[in-house]
Length: 235
Image 1 (cartoon, rainbow, N blue to C red):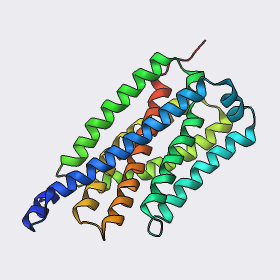
Image 2: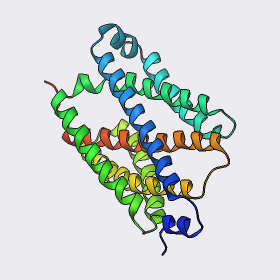
Image 3: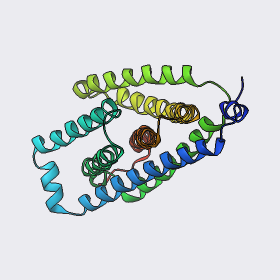
Image 4: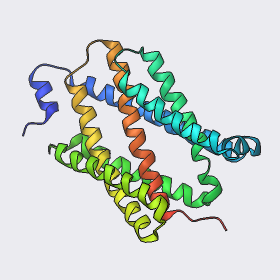
């Protein structure tokens, strides 16, 4: 199987454009993670913000629903919106996630959060590099991972009522495996999209945001599942 990058070169395209696009994707993903982390840290240190976010179930669930709506809007309407609008939605989404994820600083110790973050970053780096450079087609693995993701979502809903500790750990380990696989698959998918080009500069900018959102979600979810395994809870 020919490497897509080799195919691009064979057709006379500039492979450096693919690298430049992927750099933009990783750059926006890093910005989003930084925003989420800083907002979460600041919120956790502010009693006023904590009370605002968590004192009312309406506010908390409103934030969660709001983040789902923003992601849905971005992915569904990306073709019709401007690059500026797509970027703004992504930044707002990252900030809202920071408000929600501030709760982890109340539950887990700072040292275990830091350790889990570095484990996540290392795992993400290894799998993303693999997804970028491998010549193997990861589409089957991606399809299996997506189906398995639907399964653990349903299992999580069921366990919300059952409160089974055994099922909790099964979901946690499965979540780590699923998002580890998705990082490689999504990296390859984004790279393939870049290889075949875009219909104009605006389309390229918007797709860099979509790609960043995809990898951002993979990173965040892997982090949360690893935190369930390695997070040390406060007394």
